Image 1 (cartoon, rainbow, N blue to C red):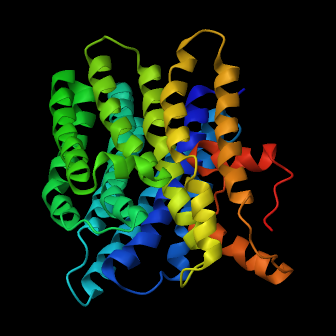
Image 2 (cartoon, rainbow, N blue to C red):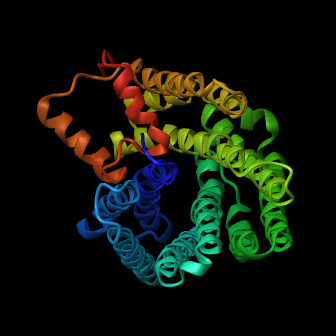
Length: 390
């Protein structure tokens, strides 16, 4: 059995982080209206995954402990390279780039500060606990929160095939509010919980503002009528719920581990489920829209509301003694439903060369990590061996 820090970093450093870096390398050219990323940039998520795996093995004691700060230093360099590339693409844009790219830059900045805390743990062991808390919160709310809130205002209107003229202004106005709130939460959690409450309030104001903007623009019926938009809406609500749970933990009303489960299941699961339901068909069939792409998207989004609702219910299961096995079985069942929906799409047979091209494309776009999103795709392939695309 793995140690709890090793297991947590297996999910975050080996799965979530490479997925976020791959998403950034995919969306920045879109937001800046520039060309595809160079092969070296496309390989950065894979390098981050290797570094994350080294960190996990070091925490587990399989390899020397000194590899842990080395892996953190490597990830700092990789994040810096990606940040520099994103800024260069923004400067190269013919017109003013979409403000969403700045959210990715802020998310990468939070990642670099969180990783710097890992290096400081080795230099200043007396402050190890405070630095560990700072590292945790800046990753959870800084890196993931900023990347998510920078993507949702663009991705949800795209999923609904509608325009939201207010999304750009919201992204411009709320960036420093959310980024500052995440930094205040991380610092306050390590120093004094009262500051963390103030930071959580800043992020909550931005999240509720986006929610009210969506309801005003699209209406609650339309948001819930599409599986992808329902999942993304659930993710935004899950982020707000995470902030409330974090405040409850800071005041001593709840423990830390259930709050992390709220974040992972109520926020992360619908976020990744909804985003991949919209993006996987595009990555599978790049270029002009085809009937096969539309059909795969329809099948993936078909049970989006059901998955989001089950995720809300499932977050309660691990709190009851003796139910961890049932909880993980439920996760695998969600994965089975998601993957089987894709399998029911009627897709023309692929030859060997086309299959290899498809796998290579998905491999690049997902940063060589099919086990991302909490193991959703990995479990679905393992427990649904009979799946065929035809």
